[in-house]
Picture 1: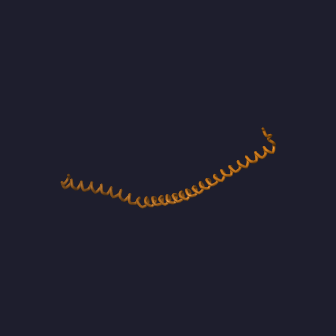
Picture 2: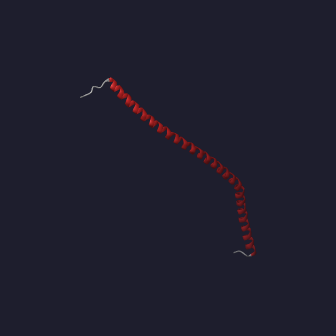
Picture 3: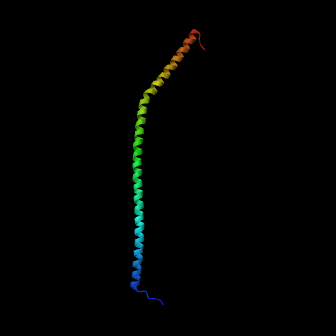
Length: 103
């Protein structure tokens, strides 16, 4: 008992399948849109964190620049003092040798 399939039967079957496929695609699309929105939210959060980090690094860079500017005169002064101390040690050694107290 084979039932003869008509064009109307085929059209109804195709329409049913297309409708089912359309529903599945809509479900997948809806899920993807939710995931995309989640990723966007996370990216926006990361962007804010990177902006904050960038601002903090700019502040650190400024602090380091100020420290260098403050320390440069001290470094020069210490170098000059070391030269003066070496000269004074030479003079003391010469004086000690001259008076007979050389080590």
